[in-house]
Each structure stands twice: as structure tokens, then as C-alpha cells.
Length: 380
Image (tube, rainbow, N blue to C red; front, side, top):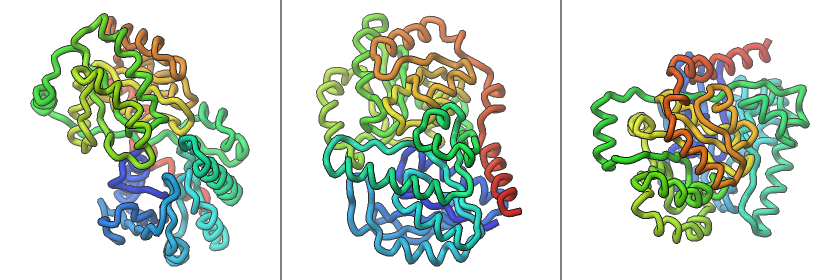
């Protein structure tokens, strides 16, 4: 099968959405399908055409930006060419360009499968409010044109205003989760590199307002009162994150206050992430709004034997609920987050489950197989 994927940002841009699509596209390519990704050339130094792990990547040049959105004058022309070269479409929302692609797919009588990753909630400001409305309208148009719409969990599908409009089109497919193998020596080397001696609390995300980084920062005094040597390791982009410069400036005084207990390790590749997770006593996902719908890093950590504390957002709470590996806390509640972290540190074995038990529920191959079956059913 020839499948055209489309999303605004693709790798090497790092986010849960880009990791999801990279894993899915690569897995389908391994299964013998011809996969093309149409995306933005958000960084001019990136090639316009390349093949990554068997996936053909086509990037449209960016003429201008509106907040996190991009304007790509040649995108429509590229979409015309690529739509004719493929048999089906996998579109990933939120995405301003999705309606035009979906229309092309329907006119060509192709299956058009949308995957709804999250709501779009940009920071305050007139331009961002306009951008939110425009993308919301584009999402609705794409939803109306889609053949099927994939949601990560029934929990999020039941609570999302967007997904509730299209109940008859919803298919629930768990997200692709995988962790590279790490040797005991590599795990020990990571621990020595960062001189990890006391309790280690992990967070893996972009430094972005919706991630709730300040919820963890505000929980630290209570945690440090009980565990003075506790450290936070933050893995992910934290400098010059698109659209998040003001947020980083606002948190800078707190980072300075806790500089002896907070370490930014930057964006880690798969091999380093496989050594990051086992060195944590727990991971936290304190996200604040529905731009977060699951938190892939929770399951990645769980596969390494590391429990999670997650906010009670629809979808985000599901890894903990489904596995029992951690605690769910009220959204934005630093006191509750601190209490949950202290509870896990005090009785960690209670929250650990066998890797095989977690892997039965979540894997990249399982996700790819379900998408493959969906496309094949829609083509017949």
C-alpha cells in the first residue's frame, strides 16, 4: 500500500506528535508499505527531500510563521503531486492544511484517516486567538471529510469537543511505544555522568506552557524537605523552543532557585532515553490542558520499570489507570503532585509492574498492525 502522511512538523523536530508519526511511518515501511511524509521545512538547513529509515520525506519551504503555524506557498502543489502517487492518506491534527489534503483524498476516492493528537491551545494574545480559531475550523473541515478518525484512548474521545462531533467515525488505536535496549553498563554510565546519588524525578517534554513545568517546580520545596538530595532530570528541548520564549523567561527565576536540584539534559536520542528512564525513581507528566492527550513517555518509562505521576487529564491518566504503575493527581495541583511523588518514593515497589505486562498493552508493532488493518478494511 502507498500511504501519504502529512503533518506540520516532522523529525528532527521533537514532540510527542512527531515521535508518534516517525514510529508509525517507519513501522509501516518495515511492513512493506511505501510511505511518504509531507511536512514543513521549518528549518531552512533541512533537505527538501530525503529518505529516513525507509520513509520518503518531502518538506515544503516556509515563507512565514504565525505563532507555531507556518505558511508554505508550495504545499498545495506538492499535495497534488503526492496525492496522485499514493493510495491512502494518514493526516495528523492539529494541522491547518488538513482540509485541502482530505478533499484531495476524497476526490481520488482514497481512504482518509485522521489521527487527532491534541487540541490546539496557544498562549494568550490576539494573533494566537485568531490562529486557534483558524486551526479549529480547519480541523472540523478535515473531520467532516475524513473516512475515519483515530483517537489514542476512549477516555480522550469521550471528553474532546472535537472528537465528540464525529463519534460514528472514531477508531481507538493505542499509540506506538518503544524503548531501545540498554545494557547495565550503559545505565550505570548515565548515572555516573550526572552524578545521581539521591532520589531522581524525571520529566521528558518540551519546555512549553502546556506541560506544567511550574507545577513540578512549585512542588519541589515539599519534596526537598523530605529528601534534601532529590534531583529533577529534565530531558527535552529547553532553549529557544518555538513560541515558548516568554514562558522560559517566566520560569527562569525558579530554575535559578533550584539550580542544585534541577538538571537539563537536553534532547536525548533513543539510546540515551533508554538509559535515562531506568535511572529515575519516577517520571512526572503534570500537563495542564488537552494539548496533551496521553504522554508517551509514561509508558516508555513504565517499560523500564519506572512509575509515573500524571495529571488527571482525559487520556493522560490512562497509562497509570491501565497499568497501576503510579498515581493520578488533580490538574495543576503542586501539593497533590508533591504528595504523590513522596508516596511513590516511600513505597516504590508497590507501583512497579513486569515489563511484559505493560508491553502487552502498548507497542509500535501493535499500533502499526491496527493502522494497517484499518486501511485495508477501508480500501475494500
